[in-house]
Image (tube, rainbow, N blue to C red; front, side, top):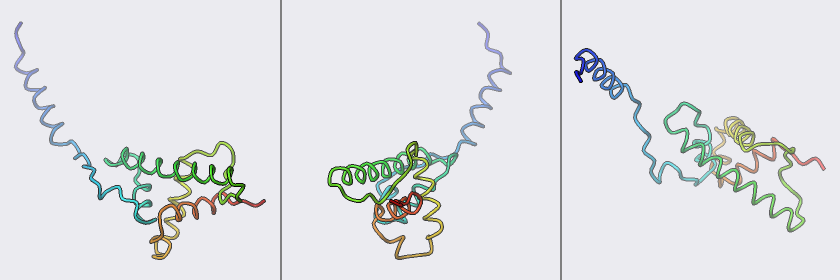
Length: 134
């Protein structure tokens, strides 16, 4: 079998171009995924599709929201407490993420709100988007 020199050159050129044009991979370390305050959660949740860190940030954001909402739902059901969030059936975690990001953008200059525990900021955002008018 004879290897065509032109084919080899094209393949090598394509490989080199791919390496040179490849976007750097986002190295995730413990400091990147801290949830010390609402601002931290906002910075993670606002990462958009197409950004190198999107997959990691998306899973971290979704996990935080889902855990907080599950806890809210479980504690209000079991203890007969008045719910703080009354989302309609069919509301998705993505809907909650979008509501939180919108709320956080609107309040990003409020140091007090953005400095609160992230679960408090999240619940405030979701309660504003899905109020309980009962």
